[in-house]
Image 1: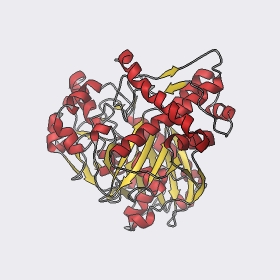
Image 2: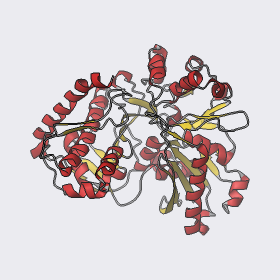
Image 3: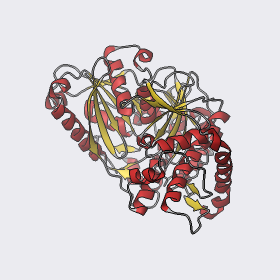
Image 4: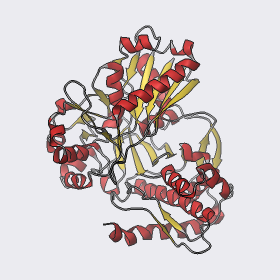
Length: 484
């Protein structure tokens, strides 16, 4: 048996698969986000451990015999988080998360240093790890002085699981310290934030062994024998392993808290000025590009909170037949935007409201706004040399057929739905655990799921959607001066 642990923003998922990659079961542990100030987003690393224990305990209770046979563990996690620990492995402050935008001034200063884009292949975004450390040095110098190691969230879990300081390429590519083409830490970029390679974890590929489960934990969990822990992956690369999006040109769209348009690449294709992320993949000698929007289902959940109706009820009111845009436009920039604007201070808006603008009209605008934000990502990927002919949909938002029809029509490409099953980050992490433990061929393991159905673009509405997208595109520059 092989265990996948996915440390998300809202919870930890534990998934068990067997040697044939059949899912045996899964369980979850819950997490909350602390927002002490506008633009801040933090979590206590101790809560990750608690949520992991909660998920593992739940999974073990349901499948005790199978759980005892675990031989490999793979890790997936929310990217970019700055987990700061001292020489005795004590956490120095709450982890600053991926969607925290406090360090936008520091990010701009680092991005102005041409070495960062040249070596990492990416803009230095406020959500990335390096500017967070520059912020800590400036605002919390006592904390900065005690830092012995900087770990990404899933790699803090690895420290708890194995006692080792290890990371891997896909997650580390989102720190602004990795030479992404060479797949190695850059001493130049670390020095630019007054850090050294000694304060970084060792690097392995996501498919490689990266420690073994501590004997105390193995005994507590009822597992005998060595359990290999794989390098693992950042959440999107792990989802790509789960979806089999590992070959050049394969792509998926993820509708989670954030939204992602992800394409696998057989070579390194950076174009930082497009705000497209060019990162290492979890498999050796493979890279990927992705556009990221900061609020996907988060935008619908915000609308749900305001209206007092569940997200499922709101989308249910729309039915399944795609409607033409109404003229009401929603900009989903609730916590800023990453691709293509790299703007931490822009905020969301409804435009075109009138007396007739009902709750259903606003819901439709929210879904369309996210679809158009993903279209922005597609245009950015195209500008970076990646063509996408179809995408597979994953994430909680993909349960809405209406939303997928809106995305298909906005992108102008078919959206495939995987057959029943969970092919997300926890499954991808379990696959990486299997590969590390058995030394199996990664391409042979990371196959795509069977397609259960395809949602085609609604050609009759393509003109109306194109007009609505042009309106959407015109609104960012129009409101930018109000936010800045």
